[in-house]
Amino acid sequence: MIPVMRPWFGPEEEAAVQEVIASGWVAQGPRVAEFEREFAAFVQAGHGVALSSCTTALHLALVLAGVGPGDEVVVPSLSFIATANAVRYTGATPVFADVDPATANLTAKTVEAARTPRTRAAIVVDQAGVPADLDEIRAAHPELALVEDAACAAGATYRGRPVGAGAELCAWSFHPRKLLTTGEGGMLTLGDAEGAARARRLREHGMSVSAADRHATGSTAPERYTEVGFNYRMTDLQAAVGLVQLRRLPELIARRRALAARYQELLAEVPGIGTVTDPDYGTTNYQSFWITLPGDFPMDRDALLAFLAGRGVSARRGIMAAHLEPAYADLPTPDLPATEWLTRNSLILPLFHTMTEAEQDQVVAAVRAAAEG
Ligand SMILES: *Cc1c(COP(=O)(O)O)cnc(C)c1O
Image 1 (tube, rainbow, N blue to C red):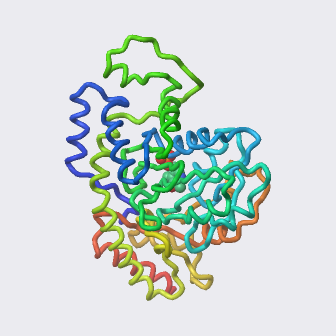
Image 2 (spheres, helix red, strand yellow):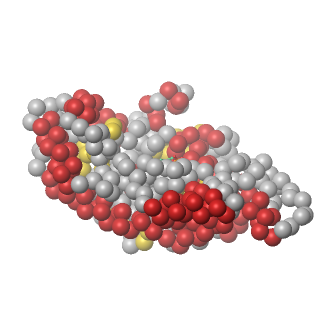
Image 3 (cartoon, rainbow, N blue to C red):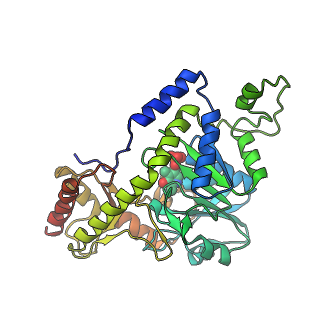
């Protein structure tokens, strides 16, 4: 079976983990601090705060933006459900906006349609690694706090710079379904030093002095708990893996972009199939290679997934829509035509670093066989 995704590791990751174990300090410590510095430099952000996941990074981003009960936050329904869940953690209400059918991302116009006087913020997702047009949204909605959900977008570019470079608050994921993985893990990048210091306290129970700093300095002064915090820490074991993975990222993206270009060329011969591609203002890292089916395709999306599985190809449904899930059934039913079309008619094809051209040919042959009925 050709998998939809496979992480790319080498002996360097194993050696890095062994080194941390041998050091005797495996929780958040010097490797986390080093990973934060290197990742923030890579995405050209002022500060990086390593966390346990992108979900916790989104939660802290909203806390730093001052979002709380009574506020509304505009989010795309067409996203992994963590985007909307993070809003609920703050006591605020998510309001679902539609997306551009070509990029699968929010636009200034779709945010406008979801706004009310209670809207405090929006979470702009770079869906599947395709950058959203953040400048356009910011220019049209200067009153809103914008949080970028760049879970999928490490190494994608926006207007000639890395995604995240211009963001006030940007959340990243290092889950194995993403390009750069630490097993589980996330990061919040931001420009503001005070916000970064507060996020570092909040990830560690609101402590005024981190355990790692106490260990490093030998300080015996008792710590204070300045506000109610969380345990959202990353471990040094994870960060050590992340440092190696970060060095692999440029090669990983080059390979994905080459394989994606080959998919686009081969699938252009199957009538009506749409494929994800770069928007005109940036480049995607092809975190997920999604295709859309034309209305006259001989089978529906779920039948196609079963057909592909029968031919040794593990594909996945396209991006989910949170407003169709029971967890959000209590909200008013929004009118989201592009979201509903994309979630029903798209699927994600296998794409991973060690994928061979023969495997890719097998995937395309299976899609073509389905198209021919
Ligand atoms: C994967 C993903 C998340 C969640 O990331 P975790 O690190 O697993 O918490 C959030 N948003 C989007 C868009 C994602 O794709």
